[in-house]
Amino acid sequence: MDRQIKKHHTTFTTTTMKKNNNSSIEKPPWKKKPTTLLLLLSLLTISLLLLRLSQNKIILITTSSQSDHHLRQNSAGFGDDSCLGRYVYIHNLPSRFNIDILDDCESISRPKDKISMCKYVENFGFGPLIGEFSGDGVSQYSPSWYATNQFMLEVIFHEKMKRYECLTRNSSLASAIYVPYYAGLDFRRHLRRRNVAVRDAAGKELFKWLKKQPQWKGMSGKDHFLVTGRISRDFRRNSDHKSGWGTNLMLLPESQSLSFLTIERSPTSPNEFAIPYPTYFHPTSAVEIIQWQDKIKLTNRTVLFSFAGAQRPSRNQNGLVRTQVIQQCKSSSKTCRFLDCDVKANGCDDPISLMKLFESSVFCLQPPGDSLTRRSVFDSILAGCIPVFFNQESAYKQYVWHIPKNESEYSVYIPVKELRTGGKNKIEKILRGIPNAKVVGMRENVIRLVPKIVYTKPNRHKPDGETLEDAFDVAVNGVVKIIEGTRREIQD
Image (cartoon, rainbow, N blue to C red; front, side):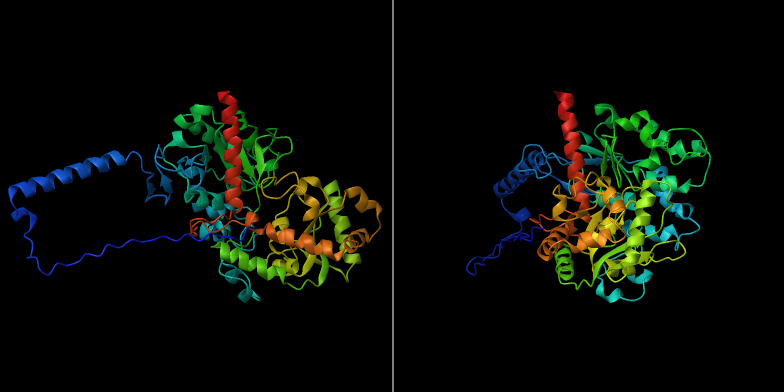
């Protein structure tokens, strides 16, 4: 991370008015001679004309009382525009696509949830403060730590986008158009419903509404993007059978025009782009991030490797890999620690227990589970723990905007074949074989990733000259570049 956060000094010029003791007290303007009054009126008229002319050239930053948007209205021809090529327009969707879903938050809770999903909606979607959720060890975490639910990305992203520095009300200026539909939370409401028509209804209604908007017609939706807080598979049901999983949102004809930002992309879909799962840390400033990085650099790591997760059925490769990982961790009990995340065990419900495990570990095992990706990848990076992958699609081919290509510099990759044929302590042998100097360098590289994998507070003040980008900034820059590339192709 570039720690050279530039400080911007604003110089205020004060004008000192000197009092002339030798002059008499001036008369009010309306008591002066007619020539003086005419001169004053002329100067006032000229000033008003100049002000009117200049209004079309100044970038106006206004705040909407309804949505608290920071909006730049016009940038034509006056000075440098830092938002040029970065403007985003937000569709003002009917409330049934977002706000109403949050108002009906009890419907997105499940019987096995430890707390109501209504609590997770609080604080911009970050959920309750970690101190309200956890007991021991809270004091070492700042007020920027929350018990954030992994499915809250849609709310978090929307709240941050409302305060994005380059919003515009003029859609013709926008490089990208954001569609704030909470598709994942909407699906969760209907998770247990076998009627696929009910599950699919909102997606169809959304596109019916969008196609009526003038913004859609410009590029037939190719400049639009939508963020989902669930994996791609949850929106790719390809049959109408009532037992089918998920909705068909991403398979609708109109969806082929949109760009989707999702926590896990389909490897076969060119218009999907993976962005990080939310972590528990949502800092207010770059200084707070640096302080956290300094802390985890000095952490005493007494555990060689650890795994936090639950057993999965061994009927597919992901389940088999997970079984192997758990067995090898248990067989290396002196060097590996296993935190059972089974529903009955509730080992991973406490964010502090999870973070303490990762902060004490040198390596964190990240086998696939229900899907190829895991929120745990980002929790471990946040803790400065070197991730160990068993599938290229778990991170390397997913989060291409947020993590570097030189994967061996910040992670370990163990192919499944090597895991299966290497004996019951293969993982331990591989990790012990990495030179200590190499491990230190890898950990430093992991810690450098922290700013780009956290979602900072939406209302944080970003000083002029600050170059730090969080996960949101990286995602917006990435999708804008994709859409601008599409726009150039259409124009050519």
